[in-house]
Image (spheres, protein in one colour):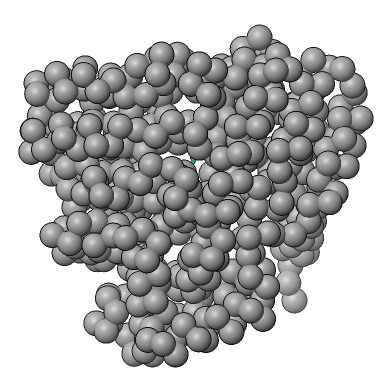
Length: 431
Ligand code: DSN
């Protein structure tokens, strides 16, 4: 007989699961690092693969029963190569941070210097000493940042690199509006015998859809989670030059991964197929939507970051909301009216502003995936403007959000389930 306390906890859990799904069903999701997967992806996520183990590499496992898992992983590698044209692919990291830890192990030794962007300028926590970079014991030096161009200052970076001689130049970001100067940094890296590691997590889907600068030809290693603009399950990949294959693979297994969550690997294969088919139109609409939202917010009176640069080239829009009390109260107020986004440090914030930074960060990849277009971006901007200026009650604003969301209840740019089974079957038979 289960104890009453456990039963009560289970009731609480069931209620939370129900409430969560109802909340997201009637909300506008704008977290730049999230996305929604198709029903076909979810089907594979629930498969028996999630109950199995596959340590090691394709064809070289430590457990029996992996013969079909080997096929799945081989397909995942080949589809990833098709999407990104990379010499070597590892599909085993279970998250972006895991991939970054492995990349640091492959590229650097403890005590080596690493250049990365500060967190306010967009650097991810795993590019820093309190996460993946610190786990490898490297010394992090921040890139000089050009506040006007909202990007890495190449000339100052060259000067600093000649002095500091970093072994790794980390590119890619979490607040990522404009492509980093990858060619220029790769050139500097070659001058000081360093390597380029590009964290493409945020823009992977835009790269797959050919709507963002492709870092693969200029980077030694590209790491990326597969669930932001790339609409797959939560895991990660590492792309690298062929000469680094062994180092990368060993850093992943046995370095940071034992089993690698095979149900999400199967789901990732389906997401790759979706991106091969729909990636370009999906990515194009994401960038169009981001630009449309930025322009609409700006014309209403919001202080949108990057005006002189066209606001954004990615899925993200950043807004300085200092005049409305800062990112923390503004993000919480939006949550109350069913708009989900996050507070964010902006390049001019120092770390003392972490709790209440100047900005909010908005990502439009998920609303694009459910079919929203430029017109809905304008409607969304209007609700946001009414909200920060308290032109309506929160109850009325929540109703406006629910009304806007009402028509957008299914995932676009995706196969239907029967089609995906047929496609996966035909692909498997071609191997
Ligand atoms: N922290 C996530 C983001 O929102 O950018 C990435 O891990």
